[in-house]
Length: 158
Length: 290
Ligand code: FES
Ligand code: FES
Image 1 (spheres, rainbow over the protein chains, first blue to last red):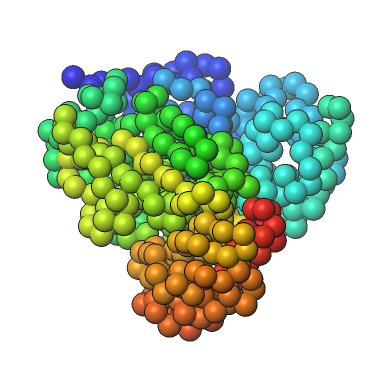
Image 2: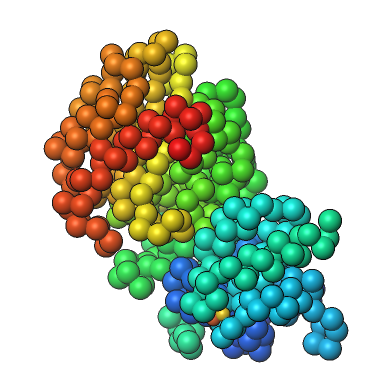
């Protein structure tokens, strides 16, 4: 008989057992059940990328990703990028220094998308950065500074 | 935005094998459906599509995630994602249409959206992978319990998927000896959105002359479909901007163009010759975005 409720998953390295319906969106579980409010929600229909997190090494939009599909998997949110009192990740630091953050609503999703890009492609071209951002909308910055921050992070890691 | 938990009541079943998944789906019949990346199902309530009470999760089944490439033939597991297609298929080879069709989707969606999800979703006029697969003469393998069957994708698309069935794989083959293919999509923004109109083009050329052709338009009618009149307009001539535009004009007359969310009928008709020209230019450029 197939298993219907293997309700454990690992979030930012911590294994958790959850008691939520399997079709509850992962973004809601993160924010409302676990208090991980770094993940933002905008459109709630998979179009803006604000809710992007990493599941088993691949980005997903958590607003339309049922938590039940994450059972047994590893989820990384923006909170995984730096300890509360520790240094920011290199990408976060470059976002700060290059002025890539204005209102900040898109920022956690941008950071997760670009962190994943830099893991897959450590030295991306500008076009590759632009392509990676095709699912992340920003209404404030005009993207230029986000791209600069990403390329500066890659350059520093050379 | 708070969501009521009781809106998410369906059961999610995690089978350990394809056999177990097929048996569960056969038992559930019309009450259940396979689920992979879940994007279509999660957006169902928003778009007022009916949902099921039971879903059988298939994305984790290794057999359904296998992508086998052999020259001009691809055997694609049902749960192969758009990202797998984009990363695994040569964008300049005979199956290039599939790679091109897979890259239009933002990565966070492409990582979970599957081939079977694309061909089973209804109604979905802009399903990129469907158009590319139709141009590559795809066959769909499915099971109901232990009973396996195979059907031409064009035939599969004519009705809804059979209740209780599990699509297991799709086989695509580029036509002819000197086959080339490509996929072009027109979107309002540069990328990351559904196509307003798209075309999948596969040709077999003899020297300069088109010997055989498949031309499939997506997001134009209610569902992607082959346009044989446009194919006839290409066959026997050299591929050129003129022959492409002529084929696009024929398609604009022949197709039963449907209004889309981003474009009226007349606009769609007008863009088809230009879209065909872009597709032919891309073929001439060896798959590069021309
Ligand atoms: S809130 Fe998830 S994509 Fe917009
Ligand atoms: S900084 Fe405001 S939406 Fe991007």
